[in-house]
Amino acid sequence: MSGTSLDGVDVAMIETDGERVTAFGPSGYRPYAEAERMLLRQALSDAVSMSDRNARPGVLAEAERVVTDAHAEAVEAFLSMHGIARQSVDLIGFHGQTVLHRPADRLTVQIGDGEGLARRLGLPVVYDLRAADVAAGGQGAPLVPVYHRALARGLDRTGPLIVVNIGGVSNITYIDGDDVLIACDTGPGNALLDDFVLKTTGRPFDADGALAAQGRVDEAWVSRALQNSFFSAPPPKSLDRNHFAALSVDDKSPADGAATLTAFTAASIAAIAPLLPKPPRTFIVAGGGARNPTLLSMLRDRAAQASVESADALGWSADAMEAQAFAFLAVRSAKQLPFTFPGTTGIATASSGGVLTGI
Image (tube, rainbow, N blue to C red; front, side, top):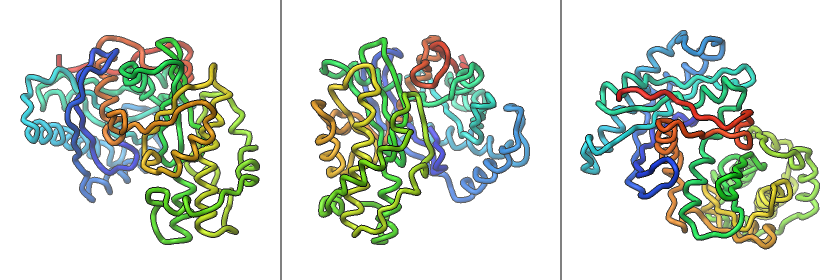
């Protein structure tokens, strides 16, 4: 998996039948060099005018070669480092590098030569996993909820549960058995808090929620912020990292501002519960926010009767989860099992996707 941060390639191994995850293997990382990142940033610019997803204008052809080589090197180094025999690998899921995502125009482009990767590694590869959903009118994202459901099958939990990912924005996957899968953004994650802490203290984030823990929450401010129409809209829904940037706590001390913004994130996550078919019994928190005990405490206070747990405490890996998910999606694709759903991407009917090569 190589994400929009352009930092590098995450690699992970799992054992799965496409329904359940029976074992977690190791994970690894291959960073992009600065020259590679510069090339990918130029590729993003050159892709803006694309209307044909198979075209490779400007530097995109060169960038595609770099992405393919980087992923091949990542896999080769991973197998070598962990002493994994190549013939023991059944399938590789290859997300590629997104350079354009315009679902309203039924257009999404992830560069990376899946056939070339399969030839170099001598292994089957599943790639181009978003295109079928977008072509059918879906958003092409998120794709990870079906993997969240597979992880949840290994838990001893009753009633519906929510997997919360708190990055710059917070998003959830709502799971109730095998038949109900809903996903959406819920509101701010760490973005507002990080920006405020950087501005007022010079630190990039509120480590361990220590600053917020010293402050006082302005509950009236939180209540006003929750009046934004986004919070009453039903899922699926999404927003940009800076959607709530106009909301200011600049009149508060660093501690009080951090406390108020942390509470806003917790309250907005809890606010999704009334919009779901049934109240969740459990919140499982992943992403950077899972490492903020003040945020977790505030979510517990606002989550009614639901329990709140961190993903790491369950033995899941927040850092490797997306790479694991694309391994899982590759198996579902090869078996033609659906991995996008009306409640996750807005597609009309549950659908599979992806291209299998190298068999």
